[in-house]
Image (cartoon, rainbow, N blue to C red; front, side, top):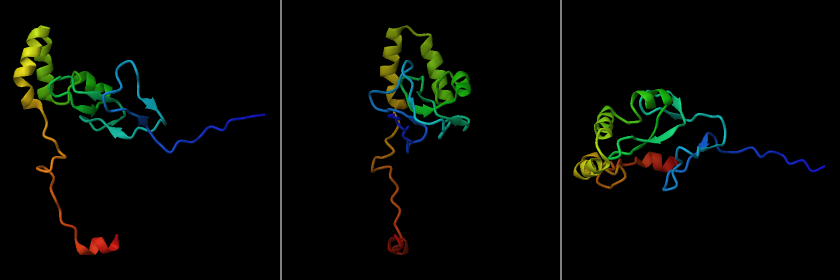
Length: 130
């Protein structure tokens, strides 16, 4: 009798793809285990739900629980929520023109850019103990 043993995964939580193949509404993240490893961006409650900010000029990738997604209309901040509501009343052409005129103010600085990285000297004692 050939009985296949179920492999125990070394991974926990969800397998989330965060590049151009981003997981959309129709295809959920692959749940590897039931562990919830993240926290909601707004309230800090345990959360594994990745979403992009509803303000298309921000579109930041965040973890957001269903309660905050409802109250914030899918936005990552109150400012983004207000922009989302404002743009919801515009025609598609008006939205496109508005985004072109205002998108740069929403573009985040690259936190990995050398200009923003704070270098901290390492003490010789910590180098020797490593």
